[in-house]
Amino acid sequence: MDIKEKITVERNQVENLLGQRFNFFITFFTITIGGAIASLQINSFISAIVLLTGLILLMFLKLPINSCAIRLDILIELIYYADKVHPTTIFRGVIKYIKNPIDSEKNTFYKNFIDNLPEDRKYIIKQAKNFKSRRHLLGFTIPNVCLITVAILLVCNIILIIIG
Image (cartoon, rainbow, N blue to C red; front, side, top):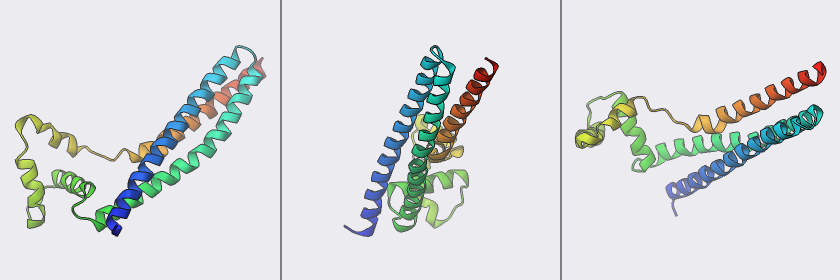
């Protein structure tokens, strides 16, 4: 197995790991919110304890998600520079060409691909002009929004306890 294949296999494993960790994070977030709401009917103090515990555990669960997202970005960059015929590289080239079509010998592959698209598939070009990777959302933005949500709920719950 050469280095290109090893990088591709590693990318597949890291991508799967990121997905699994993200799914577990969202599941635990849901359990935390559900537990806080259910315990709020019993006692506000118990609800605050559930939220605080959930917040601390979610912060620890977020760390490996961030690590996986960074590793995945690095692996995709390695694929881009190491393997010019990898689907990831070709996809990136098509996206770059659609966003900035420059006629050169290097871009004839991408130009031919776009020119030979059937008419019912031309919407791809319009969508590709606005394409941005969603990995950052999965690895960083959504976990941070979840943590902020739990923190806000915890503060609101503490205010409820103080007010009485």
